[in-house]
Each structure stands twice: as structure tokens, then as C-alpha cells.
Length: 287
Image (cartoon, helix red, strand yellow):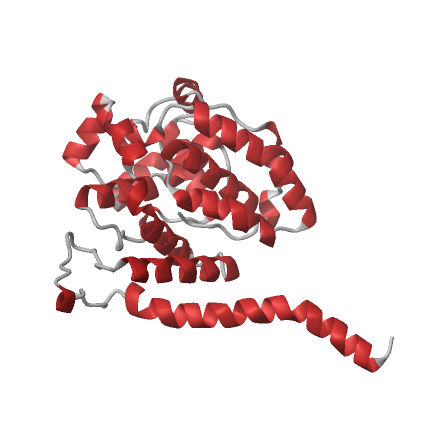
């Protein structure tokens, strides 16, 4: 091949990455004004915050956030704030299913009334470590410790324009790690994508569907085949048939046997889930 041909071939292969980098740069610039923790409410248009972390935005701004955060999340899945912003910006019309699940369950109604949030004192966190093997709390602690995850890293909700819906999204986001425990999946991209599909079937929130459509594009060929052959069909079926998990008061489940919980929730484990070696995990995608 001539020098010109070689350069042309390299350029063709580099163009998609360059285009993504360029689009991500402009998306980042557009997002900066909306997602900064210090951003001020749009009071000039009469848009006042409805809760402590609320950032009022127009539909056009939400569209900008959704597109920009999707590009940024695709370019850098290590930064969960992009996926969180995508979830915020796209969730507003889709809370009906989750809200109905909560209102149709006595525990769900109690959660909506009491508004618990997932948090631990150092003593409470340490206590999980000393629970018996096989309990939900000990299994959760072991999984978080093994993967180097903190319960305190979930981003706040900012772009949901209803205070109760914002709590629903926060609750969904804070419970994500419990789903990892219940489904016995770690934090490879394949496993995260499977859980996002599971969550989409459970809640109807579009962020899981968006992640499942575009996330596999980043996977190596063998992991992509494994995702579509095993993980995706399982996540669609299990997510559809399992009990709605958003209405579970997980803080009251620490001492329960994790296997009994799975049976009670109608969850079965994917036999091929260990085919992605955890030692070679890709980075996690945060809800």
C-alpha cells in the first residue's frame, strides 16, 4: 500500500473517534451551564426550584442535556454523572409506571410517605460486615467492598420537575446497588447494561433502554455476542416477570436470607453471568 493509501486508511479509522471527541467537547460545553452544582435557577423566566437540588430547565434545555450527556456517557462511561443527567432529563414523562407500582403496594405507599434515603453511619456500615454469610446485608457489603464502590456516590436528582417524582428517581438511583446484589452481578459494562435493561423493564424509565441501545457499541466483539446471546434475553424476561423492586423497603431486609429474597421477588440468576471475568471488568455505568 502506498503512503497516501496508508494515511487514508488510518484517517478513515480515526474519523469516528475524532467526531465523537468533537461532539463530546461541544456537548460538555453546553452541559456545563446546566449541570454545575453552583448553577443558579432560571429565575428570569419565573422558574423556581421545587426541591433542594432542583435545577429548573426548559424542554429545549432538557433536550440539550439529554443529547450532551448521552454523547459524554458514550465517550466516557467511567463518569456516572453523565448517565445520571441523561436519566434526569429523559425521565419526566415516564414516572407513571413506577408511581402506580408504589401506590398499589402498602410498603410502597409507606416509602412514599416516609421518604427514606439510603445512608449509613460508619457503625451501621461496619455492622453489615458482621452479619451472617448468606444474609442480604452481608452479601451487599461483600459485593460493594469487592468492587470498591461507595453507597454515597449516587448523584442527586436535578432536572425532574416534580418533587415526588424526583424522590422516586432518587430512590431508584440509590437502590441500584441492591439490584447488583440481588442479581449477583458485578460492574463490568456487560453486567451494568444487563441491569439497565432489567431496570427499564421494571420501571419504564427510558435511560435503561437508551443505555442498552448504545452501550453495546463500545463492547469488544466477544462481549457484545455474550450480551445479546445471554444477558439481554435474561434481563428482558426477568425484569418483566419479577416483583417491582422499587416498592421494597431494602433497609428492612439486611438480615433476610438473600436466596429467599430472590425467590420472594421472582428473580432467577443468569447461569452465564460469570462468563465475563470480574478481574478483567470494564468500567461501571452508573444510573
